[in-house]
Length: 414
Image (cartoon, rainbow, N blue to C red; front, side, top):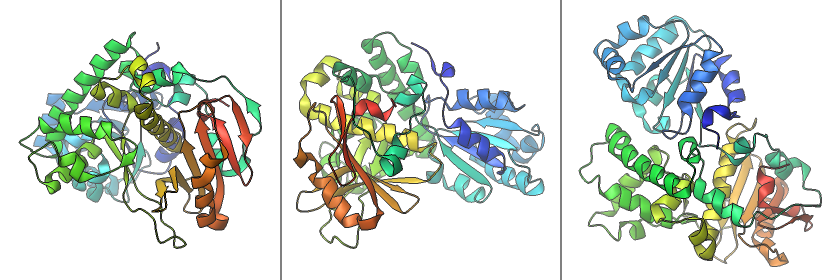
């Protein structure tokens, strides 16, 4: 299988836009998702010099004399893994304020910049942040899809497609990390994910917070992976540990900051007062989740309950990855009320149009599978653009009222 440098990352178009009018552009995302490869390939074509703070000498020089280090940098520079040297942020601010040239610095970081106060505060108004995810299925296919346009504007014509079948479980287990995908067997992929998780927790978590019980984090992450696509419950997460609920909350925030966990907030409407206000929890990547849970393609296909949860997370992450280069801002939510109506994923485009995505691992669809989407439509009113039940079937078909049944593979295949 190809490695990441042979795949086009579709976030390159927003990156080109950002350096055209913004002095500093930060590409952040989980370690090993392809940030360095993207930055070097993109910057190499445009004359950028490259320095990595994974290099101890470079990091020590920047920590010792931040102002001098920045002053000596070339006119266009890539600074890789910038979260290792927070002392540098004030000097970058001064350099940009002195010479506000678009595209002066491209930074990369493996911690969520919004959770690194010195970075976010120092460079506010001077920096655009782009999120790079692990590889999307459409990037693996090498074709940019228009699924989001169809959900919001175009609709889905009636058509037939092959079922994914066992291929769906295989894609879920493989995940999206380039280095894992380059390995030839699932056993070797799982080994890479295990080593990756251990290294990430030992290294990047320690950069963000000094905690005594590092051994708790892999176990907590495994429990969270087992609860993916379900309502977040800190009491359940804290159950196996002799730790307080606030401590578990702090640890979950740390795992979010290094992109191993995502939180999906609830969607609210003034029309409905009986909405469940708890967020959902999602694994940051299904390959990581399956490795933590000891799941391969065969065991996943045989466990329908776990398959259902992981298919939902797989779809959620694919949509998030596609939204990262979509020209309009898309916010993600879930919908659930106390009467049992729910929609797995709610998309809100530019604060206006609302679309719903319900996810089924089954090969058949019935009218009752649209009950949550119809409730969402009623609540959203004129803002409702469309609703889709994604399933592992063969036919795209309309179910009236801007509602469609669509095979999951249509997410990345036009």
